[in-house]
Length: 543
Image (cartoon, rainbow, N blue to C red; front, side):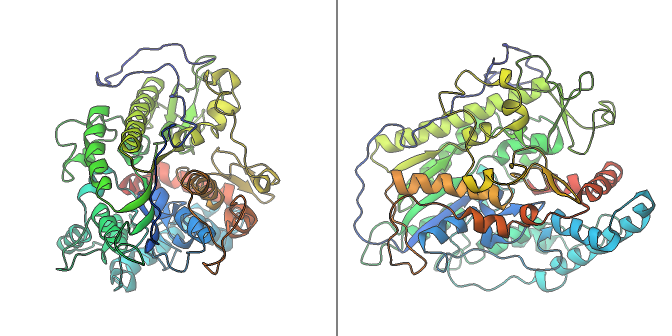
């Protein structure tokens, strides 16, 4: 049973069309429109990605281990991982601004089974831990940007939205850092301008012949202009454009629905907004689409934007009826707040939150975003371009544990038409417990729930990224006709192309070896955050 048509607008702009149920996912990436594709020549760059944290490889509050981003997973299956260029972030703490998994393991090693007597020494330990990370990236080796030849193939930057992708360059980020020398705050040991520092490692080598810095779109255009190995033509075989989530994500990181107004397209002021009105999103998307059309890419895949209120970072709370939705058949809880708050602890007079009506309005706006993205793919295919739609919103909807899977009454009318609950790969189904989309929890016995989202409750685990990679491979191989090769890059693979999930399970330390005292560490982190707003504040600064 879908939501009844609750029409409370709660300061929602008029161009947001409030929907009773979520938008029906598109099941055909080609939208039923046939396109003739020229396959002459061998593009020099087999895979290029433009996007945000999902494509960059963000996980558990940090950018690290970018060799396991989903673009690199795809490149591995293509036999092209040795050629794909991507940024790296090695240093103390295993990434930055703060790798919550690494921190949990260090707390486990230092204190074991943490109790309340450990609060003061643990707080001091965390302060020193974060100080080491801050010093490395602000003053030591991490503050010196590597010299690299060649534009990166993974051009995604965490925290970037449509406007950043259209306008921001490495030189803009360098200028911000140069004008703002780092300060050493005794309590808030956070890497200042960490997003700019991360972006420079992605884009510093993206420059034209005169040395002028390029945006991600311009950098992709430069790669596309390099042509095929044989002659001129499209220099990129497959271009992934997965961007737009950060045009709404700020609403759950701040628990504030601040809709865009004047200055939405001005990077100097638009940080005040947390969710883009549909008309503003479309204006930005139209500009981005026109630039993508100028990129020499044989195949282009655009992705829809997930319903961000599904993410486990925004914990659904019902103080009057624990674990229940606002109404029978509703997909929403009365409140959404921080994941470490229980129903008993949550106080609407004290804690940040979104209401049921605000969550519905944000999701309805995202549905409009996705209609615009679908229309862009449709128009491109009608123009003879080999563009496809990756239904990332529908994928996450079909994995949404608390919203739909555990509450059949809340499922939309189209649920069975699109295949119902998403079927996990057999290797993941064999795990105990089977991974789901709830907030990650583990204790001395191992993982007790979750597994598809990392410790920040926003970004996937390695196996979660593997699901994204598998879905994109299906489009590339079966729809676009992209060839996949063995690791030698020469022997063509036949049959279905499957991600090696056993390999990913072994590499995903949250799955294969979760921190033994994670539940206690999470309680400590939550307690610190409730009092000092350190960890959630960093996530807000990252979007």
